[in-house]
Length: 129
Image 1 (tube, helix red, strand yellow):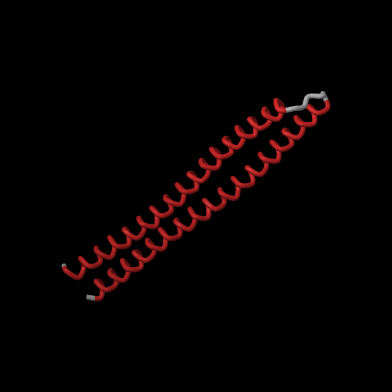
Image 2 (image 1 turned 60 degrees about the vertical axis):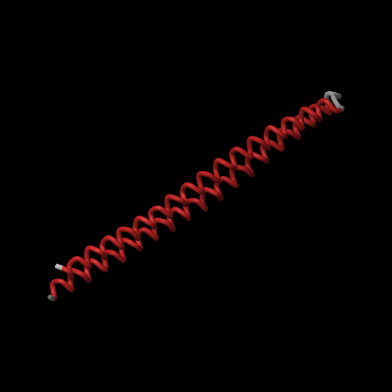
């Protein structure tokens, strides 16, 4: 009888460890998604600063060369719209990547819980036999 209790105890510890491992993997995935989000925001800020500098340089160049009026401004506006569209696509792509990482972590936590349940069920079979 003692060997059965020892085996069941060992299986319960194993089940707890499997569950905790799944939760740990989920936390790691969530942390990775947060780091990616911060990195994406930093990259977006750098791109915007660079684009703002380019737009300012273009405006200065047009003013220095005597070009003014609606046409250069409309060109700048069209360029700004393309840039905004591009930034939107990049932002969406980054959010989708982050969400995928979080889903993977949730799947790992679920797998850990299922492994733990399976281990506990196998421990139950020891009592039946």
